[in-house]
Length: 361
Length: 128
Image (cartoon, chains in turn green, brown):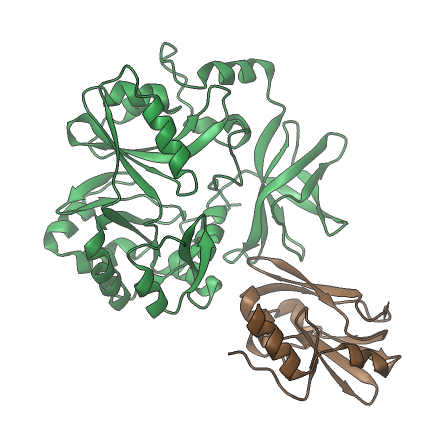
């Protein structure tokens, strides 16, 4: 039996095609993935992300615990509500999961981890609490909506009421806050401005309806994937996993090396990899001729070696195919991708591909 | 329920074929385009290629996935739908009409005996 979010009936009502997503029955699209994609780039769209796992980390030892657990450093969070994107590594330096952690009032924290990795994440987080005065507690009482796009904040404020609107309008990018009974954060997975909103689960269907009436387009996991890929954002399980170093997955910027005295899980392994040289890096690929790059296709770099596409798709915004790939570290500006036995020349670029509705190539 | 015109024949891999005056026109069904979602790329065979029934003849790609197209009949490819190069979404909007993919001069009409009737195809997609 697949799990359902509290918005299941709302999805069916909106004409969703439902699929099995890591044990959850979730909308893949509501008719046209392309139109949903464009709605987010040009106006506003909403995604039910209630299948993701919200975890509160509280107690006097929460800060020290997270500084050990996570590869990025929560000590960087100096403004209330500020968010941090980080990897949670194993001792070998592989990525157990990627997550966002918010600083809550009183030096408590709230993390959002992936749904497919929920069980192992919670077990791992619990296991690491030894020696810290900290509680790790899942928050299944929240449903979560991502409202994304250039008009997302205005449309959400219009339905949220004055009190919440005042809080939301004050948010800086990558910052969250309690907005009455919501927790609203100016974060997302699309490369557009917008919000991720946690609401008490029983209120979610009414909020969904209000946002629909305000002209926010319901968007499925299909559009979520093309949007995040255009934005150059990783997908756990595709672009990295427990066997992949964050250094080979374009996540070097999320590793907080300073202060050198901070020990975090995986640090030793990463320092070793850095000293030795990893041999691989993540790049973006652009195929301007016809065809679509897909995960697991081979990337050939003349005189250097081979790599692999980790995520590939047709980019609805650009009108051609883009991909993320893991390739030899010495790869330059060009490579080839093998699609159905034929080699196609591609440009090697630095992601993202699209930001705030515009190509950034 | 997707449209399944009764005058056409089908493959279980979701191609349709219409034979008129010894020429077979091939496309993919309404059910297939619906399952694939927005098409972004159609690769048709080259004119002059000789196909055997069951051969891979092309590829359709949607945002989500790629899917091979098989030829229901044997013969030489005499025309391909060039409109699809710039407008692959035509297959979504008109799968049995303007979204046709290629035409084959049929060398053996008995190939059609191995295809499905509309009723048989309907029964198959209901089982999926």
